[in-house]
Amino acid sequence: MLHSDVRFKEAIKMAIVHVTDQNFSEEIASGVVLVDFWATWCGPCKMIAPVLEEIDSEIGDQVKIAKLDVDNNQATAAEYQVMSIPTLLLFKDGELKAKTVGFQPKEALIEFINENQ
Image (cartoon, rainbow, N blue to C red):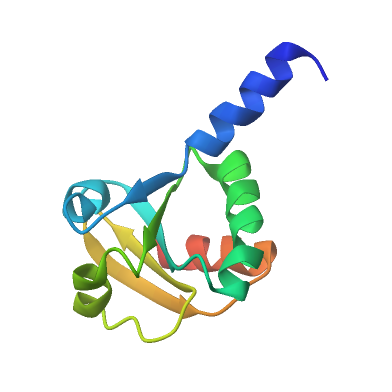
């Protein structure tokens, strides 16, 4: 792998933003944002992480992907009544448009994004 390829792949991974209770409203305020509510101990959350990275590399110019750790950001998780993880919420310009719970394959998530934005 060329050195520039490594930097490109690292840049893709950095495109997914990590949000907190403090910056959540600011991060979802404009555009289409898919927020992954997750936790480090959650098996399905670990399974969906590489799927989200693939989606970000394919359509990251159309949708921002954000991750919120529910253990460290309980206020936002409570506000949106997140009871199971992973929960994925889709926002457009700060307004909640759709919600899906549990692991989803890439094709289903892309369809979810396209149908609800």
